[in-house]
Image (cartoon, rainbow, N blue to C red):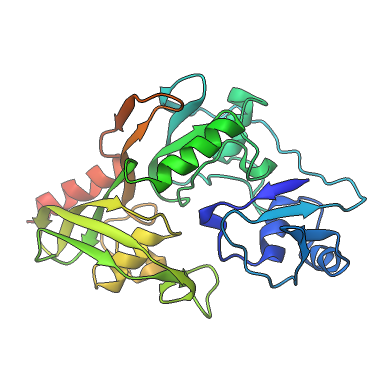
Length: 303
């Protein structure tokens, strides 16, 4: 079994990563297999603490059967755009992108398995069938799905190019003075809280977010964000670092407000990309979601 590491999994310990995607392998068992040389990276033996890098190839040669079958579930999904090679899905807030060791059902991958069966890429492992890039559980919006490995590779290269455009909408705390600006600070794993990312954290990588103010409210701002890079939690970390955390993002310091939502008020609402294996450009845009509209209405009435 071989697994190719994508950009969003970079910086994760290999034992933690594999314990998420191999159902019947505990973390301690994985650590032992690594020490025994039954799990290698790029053909070389590594330590269980090895920090994964983009394009690393994990090869698993254990003798036991690897239980990596995930359940196909009839969960409704909104397909916004589709052709024979890929689809763009509007993921709702509250849905995990892919199964973990704790939650193995109810994810977007479970829904995709029901909809497309085996017609999904498997480059990133069977628990991430079709998944080219991720959205946080409580971030809603557009996510691209690859129906085969060739398309998956095409879309990964597309995301690395300057031609790929990915825009988000968010409401943040406080009034941002500048109309347009960039946040260009490196992001890596938080040194003491592994579930978080941080400015200049462990294995930091260059991270660039473009910010455009759309509307100002009383102590809040509606912003459009363009991701130039795609680090884990990039928007949330960047906005928190300048003192304007995303509305209701408790992980990155927003705190509590009168208006309740399912965590961060953040939506991936616009994608522009090249249709696989053609020169055709595709623009996909969706309306603001329920959380965005709920908070805008609250802020408008409060002004």
